[in-house]
Length: 66
Image (cartoon, rainbow, N blue to C red):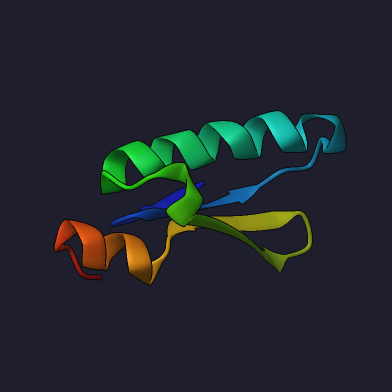
């Protein structure tokens, strides 16, 4: 797992834990970015690898930028 300002990349091998792990990651990024959960996106960035990040819209509402 790696962190940038308001994003994280996760490699999830156990497919039975994907939903729970991503929900936790969304909550974490939402909290750190001070953004609503609706402004957090999940992208598939490789095999079993997901990037969870606050969208640009979230930063424009909070005054933050990447």
